[in-house]
Image 1 (cartoon, protein in one colour):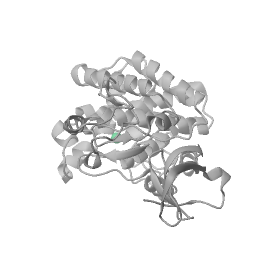
Image 2: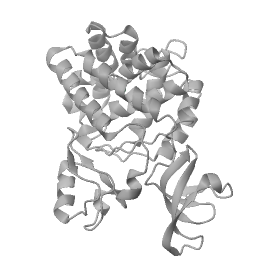
Image 3: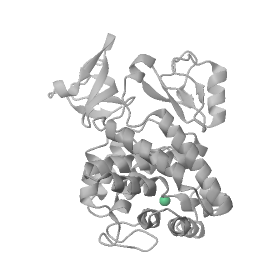
Length: 349
Ligand SMILES: [Fe+2]
């Protein structure tokens, strides 16, 4: 299984994962052999890439949450954001239900090394992003030993962290080019908008509202809107800040391609002391895989292959396609790096 960008997609390739609509309806199922009209339609719908390859190997890659839960959460968020936009308030019950499901699934799949495999349409960015930030935050909360109540409040804050963006005009939110100073000032108001909305909603704990308020604050005081320092930022907001940064970096946007998980993790490592809480950053770095399934890599032995799974965050299983001399193998073979300590990943190709 590998990610192939729409521009490189050819008729005859086989989908390895289903392609879903925003509502979670399967548009094309795993196993479908692509034809030109399908590729054309995917392009029209704004999908940047799809997974292709052997559907059997794709289904064997374990994920922290199911596709069903992911799309259920995105639907709930869509309704919630619409309600905030129209009525200025939201119903917290469906949010509680969906974060409880996410917490349950992440807890059950605790041993699954976290990788984010959703491929979003450009206009689905916000909801998919909020679900990923929630998932990554719960993973960090578990790693930090949070109890059920803390996990629930953290997850609610994480999934609603950007709710204030409904108050930002689409002309700024969806702008395909760089924001000017005035637009950027307006954009930086979304944490305060989110806080004001959530504080007014009955049944939402104050800590949840503070996550929305503080998720762009940074440990060295360089964040916004208040420039709080490490001691002034709530622990939940410190967690969501890292999840938000990571997912934003690795996501494709209209105006730029996302970076690889490996590059994003290196950046988090670099910012660990200055911008984040080091203990939270360490919990994150220990939980997320730098080489997700579908990523093509070269090993120190010179062999080239595709990541098809992982035993833990740094020891993936690689399907070797070329030997150390660059010759294609007649039959690709799977290699678990945990059983071959002499071989490591040299680079992403
Ligand atoms: Fe934000």
